Amino acid sequence: MGSLAGRTALVTGGSRGIGRGVAERLAREGARVAVHYGTNREAAEQVVKEIRAGGGSAFAIGAELGVPGDAEALWAAFDAGLAEHTEGATGLDILVNNAGVNALGRIHEVTEADYDRVFAVNVKAPFFVIRHGLDRLRDGGRIVNISSGATRIAFPGITAYSMTKGALDVLTLTLAQDLGPRGITVNSVSPGIVATDINPWLADPDAHAQAASYSVFGRVGQAADIAGVVAFVASEDARWVTGQTLDATGGSVLGV
Ligand code: NAP
Image (tube, rainbow, N blue to C red):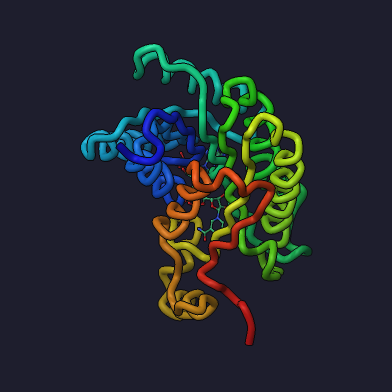
């Protein structure tokens, strides 16, 4: 029996990258996992297949985030998926707000459309996913928001993106206060540079070496590095940790 046996988790953007690593890890800990995707259903179904092959429980749900009505659509898909794939299970124990997009550009390069899009997906969507999910989330539950080390380390080339993660961290802090009486913890986990599709530039060996050099461990992060931290925050052992931002950057840019 894993530490999360009997729990139900929803991982937004669980179909690829960090979210995939988180979905697989929570499933290994025994949670039933709703693997959310935006457009790439095949990728989500593949994650579900692999979780089931390993003896875990999972189902895929699709909903595009960052568009009007996104949160309602996501929860409708979650409810339907739970009804279809489980025997009468209801409710949720762990919500991981992971789905996100990047917005490249220094301030003078960012258009209003770029700005609105990155805030719609990275801030507005998690806000309303939580808002509409609160009646499903059981007391004693967990909310984990995937933030970014870019809230601590200045990267002018991703100004708008970094701002979205700052907003997410404030949501974490504020909600932790609000939801404490229900025993729900709310935390942010902040990855450094992780090898996923969001960073296609890592294919360039020089850029990869530069990214690796940021960490005191001299390498780029992997999804599993982040998933371990999320699994901890989601666990019973983390019941006394809330309102925090956990730096999971491999000690990036700690000093000179
Ligand atoms: P990724 O590999 O590009 O995966 C993104 C995931 O989010 C996919 O499952 C994707 O589903 C989903 N998604 C994206 N936009 C969506 C939308 N509009 N509606 C619904 N789903 C959407 O990204 P990642 O690197 O794993 O990033 C995951 C999170 O970690 C993000 O919040 C990111 O900001 C954060 N983060 C990443 C890094 C890094 O270096 N990788 C560092 C710090 C923080 P579809 O494929 O179906 O669209």
